[in-house]
Length: 185
Image (cartoon, rainbow, N blue to C red; front, side, top):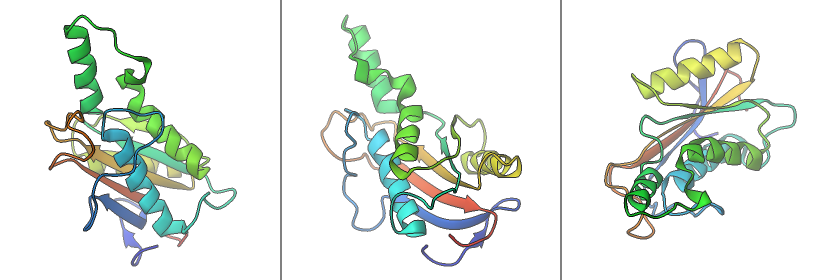
């Protein structure tokens, strides 16, 4: 874990956190099976960074149920734009551009890669993304559905179309926060 645990909203404690970009970051590593968009690589990279800071290794400790709560108001803008342009041009989008499933599938990818045993949820907030995501994480822990929650917040810049090649448009950011009941990992 990096730093000292700090209180989050309600009874939760921040056990680890990460952002993308951080100083020295370029493009996040690609994620096999995902094309065109920076959304999946950013989610995977920031989650990996946060969980590595908490646990230093993969998978997460045995028996620990960690939920993944992915929060994005706009979702995967680049994949949506690609599908829109393809359909408008009379084309047929390929199966990898089933953009409605990208947030769910990349959250599931993170859970599977790390062996997380909690639920996987995706939220499109109408208010403060961090507050809504934290409230959902707190509910999951309170109800006993998870022991901890990995909260991932991501928003792509409106011009992050992905077609320019590798990289992430300025203004695109992702943050991951591991939340728990106050005990250290």
